[in-house]
Length: 96
Image (cartoon, rainbow, N blue to C red; front, side, top):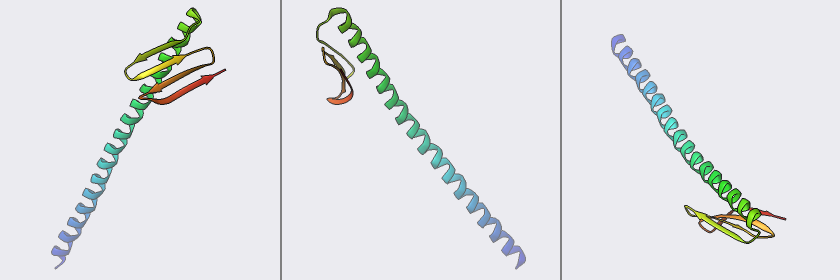
C-alpha cells in the first residue's frame, strides 16, 4: 500500500509542476504579445512626431499652410496650430 501511495504522491507532484510550468509559459506569451502591441504604439507615436516636426519645419521656411501625409498619418500646420492625425483620429495638437 505504501508503494501505491508514493506513486500517487509523485503523480500529484508532477501534475502540480506541469500546471505551474504551463501557467508560466502562458504568462510569458501574454507579456510578449503586450510588449509587441506597446512597441507598435510607440513606433506610431514616433512616426507622428517626426511627421509633425517635418511639417512645422516646412511651415517655418515657407510661411504657408502645410499638409503632409505618410502611412495614414497626416500632419497639418497653419498659423495657429500643428495637428497630427492617424486614421482621422487626432494624436497631437499644438496651438499658440
